[in-house]
Image (tube, rainbow, N blue to C red; front, side):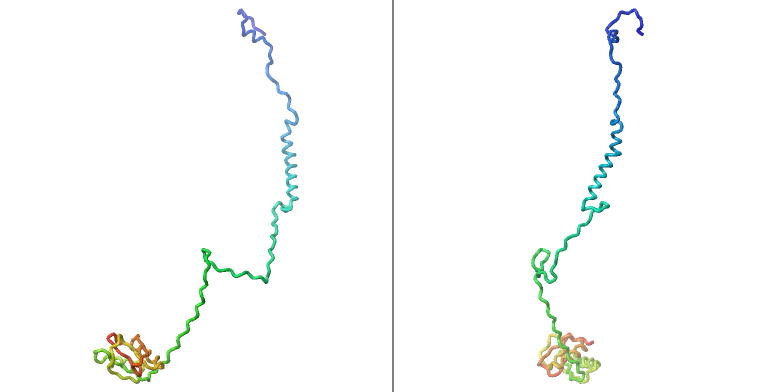
Length: 206
């Protein structure tokens, strides 16, 4: 109901009297717009999944449980009678390595003859120290030698104390004399006839 007032009508009263729609109403929703998404989830997706599984199950590369099947590798036939060619040995840099010749075993030196404690042994003093030869002869006598003589060395002074022998058969005896007196030099010499111990200033009685 329009109110009654004493004022004359203006432009605002004219706008209010125009007939215009009062609000907008939506059209009712269709069945597919309401339930289409649910139908797609419950029906379409399971059908697609079933089709994919069915296609994969028919592939020869998969087993029934979906795991991959190892394909057997073809074996390379080998000739049992064939031998590989001799490959040249190389070092880390690819350079050929020369094979060292096999060293031949060094022949063992023949053993020295057994010492003869009854062989004649001369003990000669080449120094001016009196009694040096007799002292050394006493050492040899204690070692078991039974045929000993003492004296002075008549020839040129040796560079060091030495045991000389003329016969190769006396090598073992000369070595035993040197060991008993603590002398390192043992030589084959034509200057003597028997095993001879020549004592020089470096000799120290054991």
